[in-house]
Length: 89
Image (cartoon, rainbow, N blue to C red; front, side):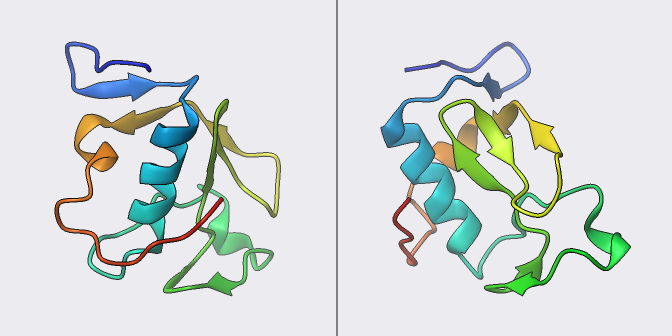
């Protein structure tokens, strides 16, 4: 399991448990999900409660609509404290 760095960021690769926690975060209407930087180009449809939502994988975030990737998440995103929705990856 990857641990946070000094800035509170957890870099990929992530365990499947961590991927599941990030998927839960992304599915929650209580928070703003991580989104693709290209989401305003008209090629990123609404999915759930936003458009251009990134999907977590063990290798990091991926956009299902373009080639954008991201390799970090905030350490607090790996807890279920405020999350009620569950999304299975």
